[in-house]
Length: 89
Image (cartoon, rainbow, N blue to C red; front, side, top):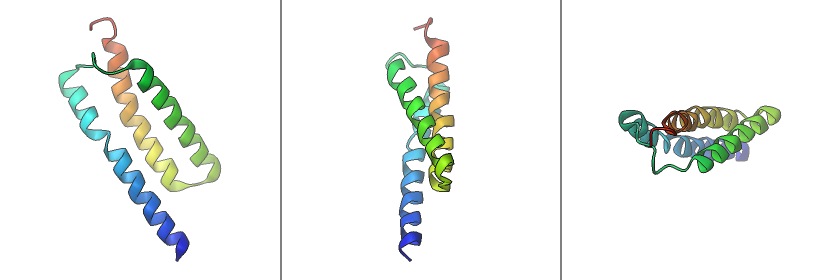
């Protein structure tokens, strides 16, 4: 029972924190405006998420794996647009 509750709480938290990136990704893709986004912050964030993903893989923790894989795709999208725009803004 405790493990099931922990998995439910962890999975719910993972969904909310991952879905929190969707509005920023949509806005970035629509506007292509990234001037106010810190390149250093997004690089560090993506590296941190990649390490959390690696940790999840090493631990076999599916909620961590799924959430961080999705977050890495979302955050990586914003980072890619930022890098492409670097010379334009």
